[in-house]
Length: 338
Image (cartoon, rainbow, N blue to C red; front, side, top):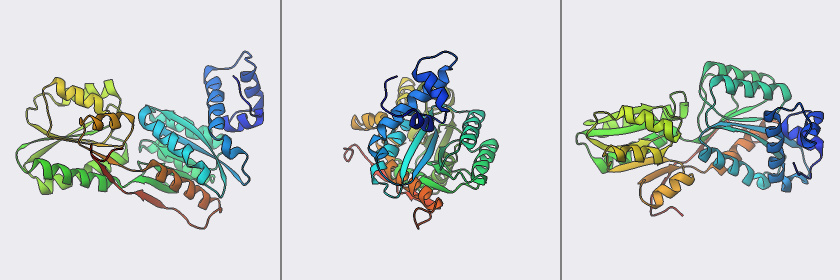
């Protein structure tokens, strides 16, 4: 592995001992593939942070733990790294654990590892489950602040939530669909990636309430599962759509839109309007060719700035505490996507 960083810096970035890093760099035996991957990732992260490494000031190691499809995780990482030069009160050193699927036990293990090695902050996008809540509270109890990203976590001592106004997004989707479809008979498909993401639950509840108030004759068909991943989403959706002949609209809260569109098309469904979330690479391509009609978007760079601000305040490096930093909903169409 070629690099230009001191072993001590790589070890701190990877959360490993210097002797372990030395064994990896010199290709010695008795090193697991997972450890080699952690060292490789640490060098890549240091390369991305190189402009900041020479800066003066307190250094804060923060850990991003994100369960999301790779298309969204890439956007999170890019946003977290792109704004580093603008954070002046400290030098942030982000470390990333990004996986498409993380079961409860996996998330807990990652958080326990962070608890053991130490951190100045954790930015977490995970399912809202009892054991993950306990792990969050354990971090907070040892003065490792946790900020939830995009999807919140109830019943925890977490420091702050940063991300989209999920209920506002759900109401916006309901208003758009009601205006276009009207209050005639028919089915509106509402898809979520997983039942335990609180943010998607908030979107769905607000969407359902808005649709029921404005278009009581429309039937909402909620579908959960697939993790926003192509093959799994297609399987879940195909089963749910059996017998449906009057699809009018789609509200996709959890991604996997290319697979959703293909599954619907293969079954002969052509919704009048399709509302999705997040301007990632896949959705940008789909809306440009008018397969999507609306994207409800928010600026991840703003979210990352708010997360860093919350950590700075917690460590006494700024005067402004951040308890909740809600991103406004941006409504994108094929006509205003750059």
